[in-house]
Image 1 (cartoon, rainbow, N blue to C red):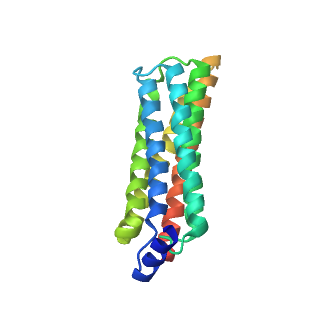
Image 2: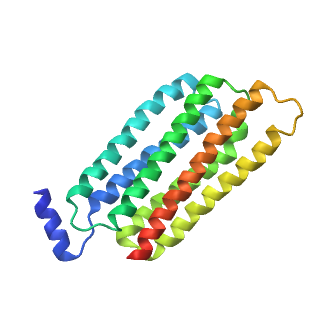
Image 3: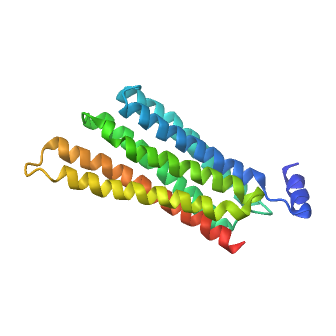
Length: 211
């Protein structure tokens, strides 16, 4: 039945919706991870509880990525090149993995006053939401995909700039404490998230350009 549906879609010129659904599923899990990190630094969720909840969120993201890879094996029509779809999915996975590491290391390091990471996580959510819009546009609104990808790229760049300012602040004190080094590790995790968002934006923009 699945094969027949795909043959029908091929004959009518429609894209394979299962692929975009899997990508959106990955992005949904990734955004949940970002909101969980935000709740953790705001004190709404304890660090231990956030660490445990992130495991379930990561598992959900892994399942959606596995679904996409499985769908790619039999897809007849893809929204963008298979290679770009795989790059996009891998980069989204990198975003979620780095958010997982941020939550895990926060749990381990117990750094006080983590509310200062709020602006960086705000931009993480902005970037993820821009990627969601770009993915939704692949089949229905291809003309806006490049715009949404650019918005995601800007968010990734903003995160990296904030990282530079945070590093400057951390090392402005002549005496580098253990807490300062722990803070550095946490902001580095968020900087890696920004890089992965930028990579995802590049993958979807490259794919859209080839259409």
